[in-house]
Image (cartoon, rainbow, N blue to C red):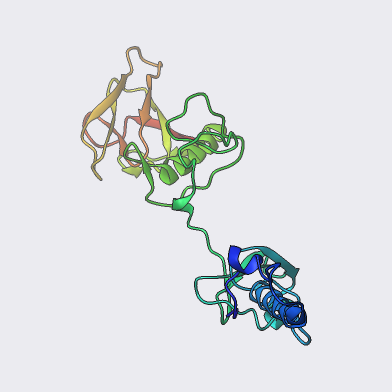
Length: 258
């Protein structure tokens, strides 16, 4: 600490009335006072770093991590600091009197957090915005109760299904045999020449009993036929009225959406 208080009284010394033979001593006292004052604010004496010390913060140094760490004798106490910019870590550091500490800023303490001054960011309560890049949504994240990841997958599948909604190959089937429809499709069946009806059944039961289509020979030599739609995962079967199957002619299965 300085020996002298640097005030108006000190600055007024030596007085005009002081003896001339005290001049050399007064000059030495002023040199000591100046030296102590400068040493308080700066390291400037032989063998020390030319840096600011205690007092108000100042921007003092720019260097890499090793160069900043090598600085010593910063002086001051925990209430004073010296600043340096670490070019390796791209961060500010302050010297608290014994060590260098990285300066951190709490985002919540920044001003203007509610300002809508970043036009590149999406704001949930702002109208007329455009999303110009892809957004990935994690599973089980919902908007208005809907899982977006599931909806996205369903839309992709729907698009693929629509693009692939074509008829498959015709397949010949047998009477009195229940079939599981692995896709949507159509059944066509013809009667034989006897005057007996054929019936198409389809529902969710493994042995379907719900009649959906019917055909009969009206005139001798003429064949009747029907076209019956079948839903995917339902079962279907074609019989004749007496269940023997002898009046059932050719049966075709035409799958849809393969």
